[in-house]
Image 1 (cartoon, one colour):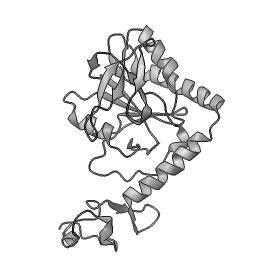
Image 2: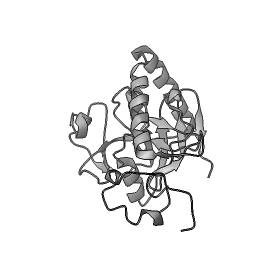
Image 3: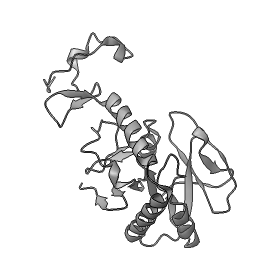
Length: 230
């Protein structure tokens, strides 16, 4: 093993298979990462779960009026980086649990000729598909009760606007933990431009990215636009 960093003491119940060979694996492989506050390792899955709970709770405290203003700022920043959208498939999202509400922006770019599309879960632990949406599209409840178009052509986004619970300055996104967007991006042959959307209060020092985490190309909040340095 090239990385000799010590794996923290763990209990066997944390893993789904026998820990007898764990001394041959490095800490990151097992889901542990160095804590930027010190030299100790943290359990990334448990830390992420706690951060999701904390950040969603903080997000829900934002007043509806302030959310509307912040969504307007985010929409303006999106317009500034997207330029012409006519004829371009743009993957968007339906807001839940206090996420930025971009539905007015979706209507505006749809009127300008963009092909907006909402994500649809066809199968658990599989990539998402995207179904074309227009302001008058009939909707039904999809996975987790999130509205999806009843009908609509399946499209492959040229631009993908993705909600975030948290993020860091390296453009890594903390999502809900289901992995749908990571699987989708890994599956797509032609990679879209991926834009993470969230509030500035969701900034983290790091999300402790793991091998499966795919960074955003750009992150947009109501206060700033962060371009990933490649």
